[in-house]
Image 1 (cartoon, rainbow, N blue to C red):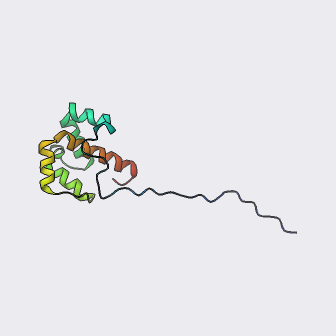
Image 2 (cartoon, rainbow, N blue to C red):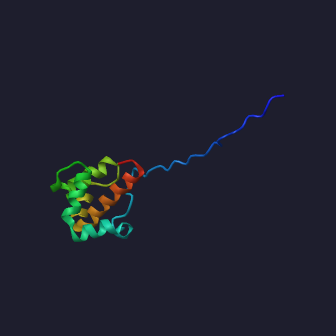
Image 3 (cartoon, rainbow, N blue to C red):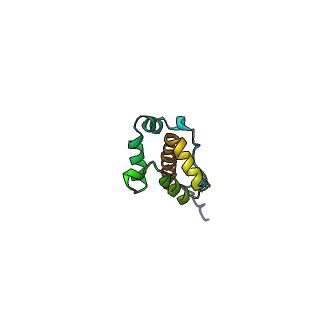
Length: 113
């Protein structure tokens, strides 16, 4: 008589979360989602600009510019235009920079940065 095989591990279902590649991970005015980034942006804007630039391997002077926003948006296929980037950085510089930093943090957590 043959013995029954013993199953030591059950197969498990793996759920893969697809990162949202073609859009911003948070909205422009979603500062309350990450209060640390928000406070850094409001109280030490140049420091946050340098953090963003360092994250993107760019010069510290470029972190808060329209060019940096455009490069980031293009890299992750986020819809928009140069005119949109210019207006966002001109009229909402803190919100713009905070949005980029939150996006970097989210993408880093998802493993796609």
